[in-house]
Length: 247
Image 1 (cartoon, one colour):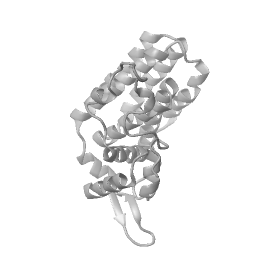
Image 2 (cartoon, one colour; image 1 turned 90 degrees about the vertical axis):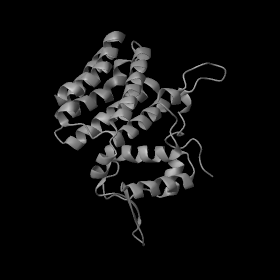
Image 3 (cartoon, rainbow, N blue to C red; image 1 turned 30 degrees about the vertical axis):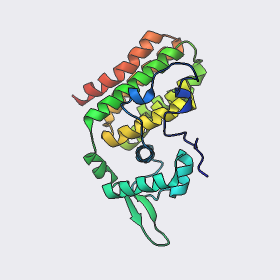
């Protein structure tokens, strides 16, 4: 029997992001354009795993049943999603005793064909809105010691030269920020957004990550001070830093 909650949470917007019964609240699916299907969830979470280097091109994925249990969706949905990713060239299916489903060796080249800057801009804007809301709600209520792990990520990013590691660290920062400020359910929402973005945009250049990381450092400084307005400005500066770094 499929676990409808799943280790990573349901693919429909996670429980904590829904209003309590009888309480009006925003429809997350309307804010992001539409709800994510089970197949899209599988694609997004595999893309996120590749960005986080939990799996690499050429690695074998977990069996469909394990993925279904982790994601809280049916095994047949996972199998259909994996088949679609094989048809797209993102995954390879191998038969035999050593067979299974593998991340395509040419993953980066295939993902480059899937880039969609318009949809990415829409998702990126919602992700910024999410973080601004979390920061505005949490400023003044987060003890400085709870920001220690995030500060460590910022420091490690400053010391790293490997472009793949830089992209991984930036993604981890945003996931951990969502959990620190909003809890596990909000982290799942951020994971859905970031996973989708991994398929819509190329991995950021090293200069871009470094420019954004200065915004991360500013954000943590202002959160530690309990200064809401400067903290929100640091979140907004994150996007303009990317533009400046690319010029």
